[in-house]
Image 1: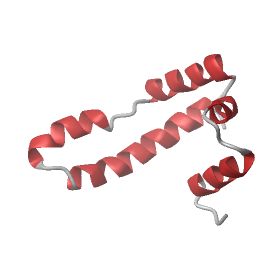
Image 2: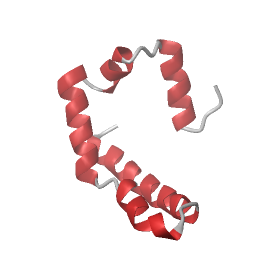
Image 3: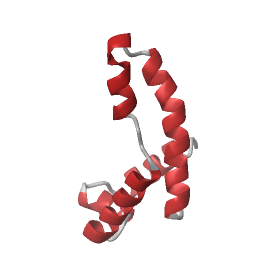
Length: 84
């Protein structure tokens, strides 16, 4: 998936999740909640660039944190809302 598409997916997810987090946050914490759940495209691009530099990409990162092939398949299926 291209970095721009990943950033767009994060932006859409952030919009949906923001509403849920705000609904479950006390009014006094809503401003902080909005800041904490903000995920602008430049942050996603920075994260992807970091993963590329440090680990050679997402697959390298997942390997570095100890996920095996079966766990990566399960993660991919879950993120795509597929049955495992």
